[in-house]
Length: 253
Figure 1: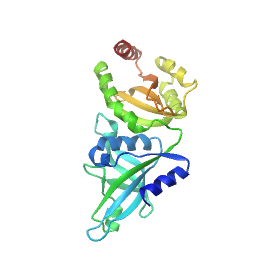
Figure 2: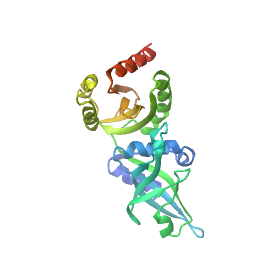
Figure 3: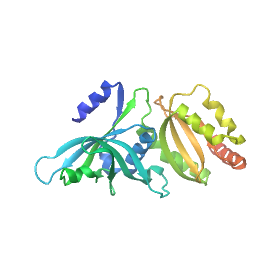
Figure 4: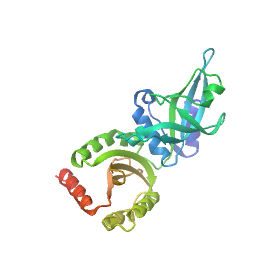
């Protein structure tokens, strides 16, 4: 199955395709890990187009589904940089295959390599099948996140890490309510989430230590990258007020 056949098949399911530049597989490992992290956390498998290289003869081509990842415990600035393995569904090998890689996420080391006696396996392209109403692609959001993170970190020194992921408003409401149960200073954050919010949202999450976060919420169905909510999930009321006031003073002026 070639690129055009994959596009046609995905579109026949009334889905759109987010298709990152193949050069980024080699040149921007952080971007590729971030893309995989953002969609897999949502529960959306990604389609990897593979080149199966042979020592002699013509290379083969293959398709596998990326369905999960494993994180190490390194405290990277971007949480997605902690990905050290991928989990793949492959009809030639089976479900839950483990994919290891070294520097580049493009070069795969997993069971199919030995089973087929291939010299190497390379992920040449990545296809993200997304619901057609999701109009804010990850790549557009990603380009701005690092800049936003840096500007927030200059104001709030407690910010140590960030992540970006897609979710639904119902999942996010549930997370908010579970976090804020019995915490009065988070109560005000519930109000906007129970009004007319879009079904699909992007979360840009800044971590202040292990548990406290600031979440920027973006409407994933709107192509314009404008945050619709800023949610403070901070357990200490004094800290909440300090952080909120510092950001308001910096960005409202």
